[in-house]
Image 1 (tube, protein in one colour):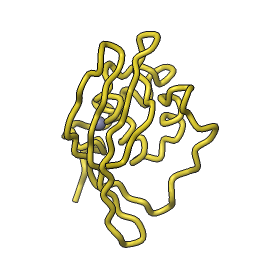
Image 2 (cartoon, rainbow, N blue to C red):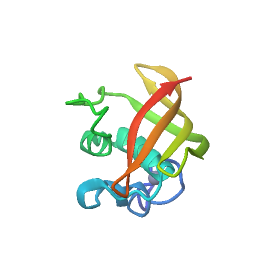
Image 3 (spheres, helix red, strand yellow):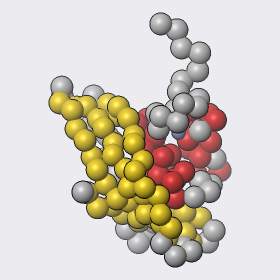
Length: 130
Ligand SMILES: [Zn+2]
């Protein structure tokens, strides 16, 4: 099988550079225009092992000091966005299901992530597993 261009891991159907790659490579990593786009780009960052991007888009109030490299052999299989809701003008929630496979076992993560807009920029605040 030959691949022309790598598809974006978030499942948009677009090539990576035309989708989440734009935010991963952007100056300061801080350009995603809304919480949903930021959420998708963070999923792709997990899939690609972009720990730098995960930390750079995490709000300072909840950001861990460091983030371990993602486990070797962990494969992210797909993202399904269930809901994207504004919470006032400066907040948003995104509910999603992410599927992965690790050590031969399938995992399914259902999370509601919270985002906040500050200084014109969207940040990941945290999530609650459903
Ligand atoms: Zn994408």
